[in-house]
Structures are given as structure tokens and as C-alpha cells.
Length: 269
Image 1: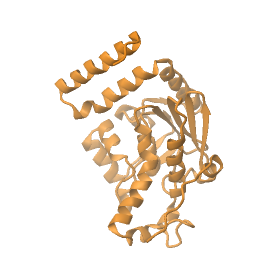
Image 2 (image 1 turned 180 degrees about the horizontal axis):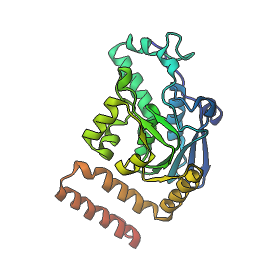
Image 3 (image 1 turned 90 degrees about the horizontal axis):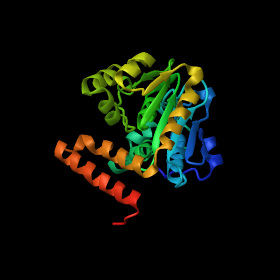
């Protein structure tokens, strides 16, 4: 059995793993900060991202995910594919040789770094430039919204490597572009550039690279301008819409609006 690796406990540990957190009142900025490695991802980075999600102050309403350097994230650290692996981490051969329960738990732990971005109490924005490949693409997809530079290059390369996208990216990708296009993007591993990303709905906004940070912060400011509880209720309505019938959705709208009216009027349940 592979011994569990401890979760990074402090901001210094997070930064050593390639992630930095800065809290600016109701806005949290999460930065991938290993530009010389094109922000290649590792289990240590994923544990840091998971820890950041758990440690976000309750006052945070919007989380902006950005990356230093020319690439958002070039994907998984390829050392995971080698016999040597990453020091202190199980490589893919070790993972494949573990029990069913251990393997499932390991992958579930990796997914934790990606799943919290859709939680109901925050809106998350990815500011994406350059390469967003594999795990990088899925991290961008984990966010509610994506602002992209014109030089963005998305690709889902897992299938080309004999694997599948397993870091929570298949559902949002399918919801955004539809089954047929998602299958084509994943099975071919081809590049999706800025213009097509906007046309397909992968990008909410595409801007020149020099304007990426400002555009993402402008979007964050617009989201923060609306009352928090109204945004939370609206997000919940939209997130659940695909799983509800028309009649169920309009009933959910009525219930949400009743809560909002009573809240605004200061009338408790």
C-alpha cells in the first residue's frame, strides 16, 4: 500500500508546489506560479489547490484563477510517465499496480483539486493564456467562466496517450460544446485556438494577451457588484437546470424568488 502524502499545510507549502493564494477582500486570486515549467501539474500542486479550496475565507465571493508566464498550464508533469516518477509521488506504474480501492481513492484525491471550483457559494473565473493542455484544459473547464487571451491553445491529449480525461473535465466540456464536438476534441487531441474557443462557448471572452488580466478583473468586479445571495441563488438555478424538467425548473424559480423576496423584506422562514 502506498503511504498517503500529507496535504500542504501553509501558503509557503502551496507556493513550493506551484500555487499562490492572495485574498483581496471578496476576491481571491489563485496563481499558478511555476512559469519556467509552463505550470506543469503534479500531485503536489493538486493537493495545494485542494487545500486552498478548503481554506478560502468565507467572505470570498469570486475566485480568479490565473497563471504566470506564457502558458496557463502545459498539462501533467511528464515525469509521472517515467519509471523514476516525481520524488515522493507514485508514478503511473505504481498507481496501476495498486488495489482497486487504492487506485480509485488516488484518482478521487486528484479530482478534489478540480471539483471545488463549481461550489455554490463562489463564482470562479479562469484567465487563460497560451497552452492549456490536458490537466491544464480541465483546470480551466473546472471554473464557471473563462476569459482567454487570443493566443490560447486548448487541447485534451489524454486519449492520445492511451488514457481518458479524468480530472472532472468531461462533463463541463460536453455541456459547453455538445457531445459530438466534445468527442471529436478529446479523441483527436487537436488544438482549439482562441477564435474557435469563443465560437464553441469554451471562452466567455477572448481578448489580446496584454489585456487578459484587466479583462478578468473587470468581469470579477461586475460579479461582485451584484448582491451575494442573489448570485448564489441564480447559480444554483442554472446549475440544476439541465437535470430538471421545465415544470421542475419553473417551480425552482418560484421557490428561489420567494426566498429572495422574503430576505429582502427581512421576513424569516
